[in-house]
Image (cartoon, rainbow, N blue to C red):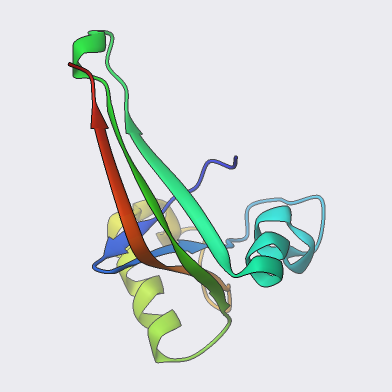
Length: 111
């Protein structure tokens, strides 16, 4: 499990491999190796609240790959930069993006 930033544009989720400090080359990151090796990914997006009756999450599952260049990668970067102002300082120029083609969605909320 790895915490990520992401954008969702139906039916795809995009998450960048940005320039934050890493111990290894981006190609050697476990999440990248997992995507390249089996071509699948699962992402859990949760909503936490001190009031446990408000807890909820969505699980997204699908095929995944890494976009290193091209129009779709550039579009994903534009979406990410619009959602996360931090990327004005930490540029995503030249950074790869993981694309998850969502095939299954499971919603859960506390009763």
